[in-house]
Length: 117
Length: 322
Image 1: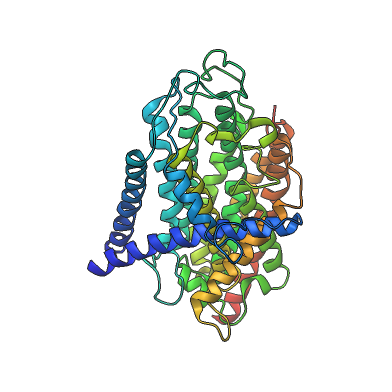
Image 2: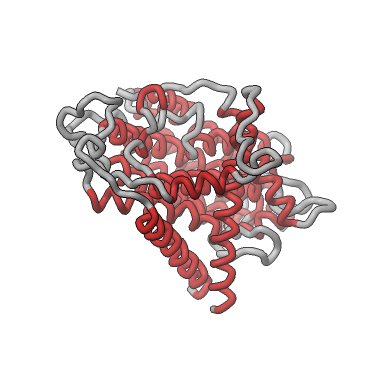
């Protein structure tokens, strides 16, 4: 665990850098705001309503498929480490697992999930 | 402990400086590709003070927070965006023993932290309460779920070949032959890695989330002053970080004749960075549905087959040894 102490120190420095540079900027910069300046930018047109409206996200089902394959990646990393020691047996085990997963991918393909709608 | 503090401090400062000048290199390179001169006025030979001038200018610019924005989210986003892009360098070895922490899960740490960038990006897009920004961050999510897996799988091939997740061990394993020079497997994996890199850096032809002609500047459209500077810095740092990863995984990191290790490393990272910049100024943007289709129907199966082919090769070779 002590390996991660430098990483934590480094992360603290990054946060400090961000906060400090924003702080210095706050001291140096001018602040002359008026209503028109504080409007949202929409190429000069007056914005109508908020941006937080419901709209269809074209990749909702893809996101579910993504979760499956991301899990696969989690399994692949330890497999990649021990493959050298275990040899062909480990290779065939992963090949079987992938074959099953590929059927799911094929199903998603045929159902047209992998398309932007 | 004291050593760690000093190294972390030095690493952060060197990175900020190097990345500032990477933007300069990119601008000069882009200018050459378009038969322009690029930055020239600030600083006598070839405008070498331009990045410093930009930083000072952004530091003293007014900070405009839109009245409709979700203030806490909007203000936090640049910081959340900045942290992962610098944190990925924590585990990068610049030369043997020269680096902050050579973690035993180095590459996993790198990949995990680098994809956290989407959180800051989405916070920026959502917090701005701007339609362009929100659309842009939605597209960014689409991009990351499409290219994260090919990116991880392409990075897995050097892991398979080296049999270690430690980045310095992966470089050591290339002391005979760089992984990019492995017949067929090496070149295909490198090509897949470059494509996924361009997508994960959101650059042309995969820059739909900042598409100037439709979304102005994407998720950062409402940011100004130092917050804009931090977002820009984070983006370029991430880009440079992924280039460094490519140099470590495929181009043998610090290995090379003659020059000292860190110089070789920087040259290789810059080579990948300029390769991506070259692509940027040579191709047109592709549509969002094309991105999704290309990733899931071409790149994902291709990288999976490549991983399995590499796995078979490694497994067969291990059989010969034992």
